[in-house]
Length: 158
Image (cartoon, rainbow, N blue to C red; front, side):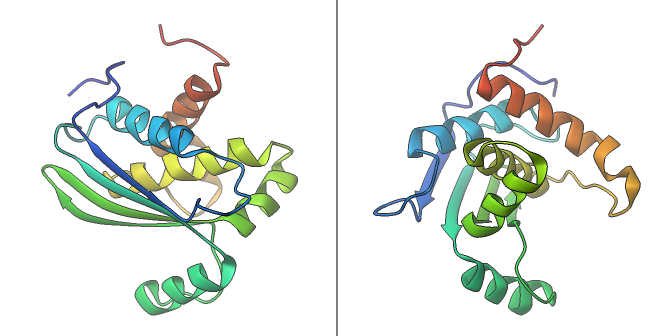
């Protein structure tokens, strides 16, 4: 299925961890990121997708990372694809790690948080990348950056 500009309206997007917090993104930002990612990815239809996005601190994401992925320490994003037709997925983003990444990469925290949401949805949809220097030139990263650029209004789709 070719990428579209359709916002994946039939998808269900659930968001947790923003209430009463000082996270630099709004629920509308997160929902737009999920819908744009679903519309842009090519591995499956966005129709009927159900995506939950949860924002956590480093302690909570460390627990998930160690328990479910057998990896030590905090990470920026973890996603679990629970079904592929339609896509059902849980995406977990560490706000603290995202803020550190933003400083490291010289971007605003909002941009990095949106990037991690997009990254997590792409992983759940079946995209992957190598862990070596080829990571940044992978299909996942190219699509991720295209979606982030569209979300931030830095370029238009042609």
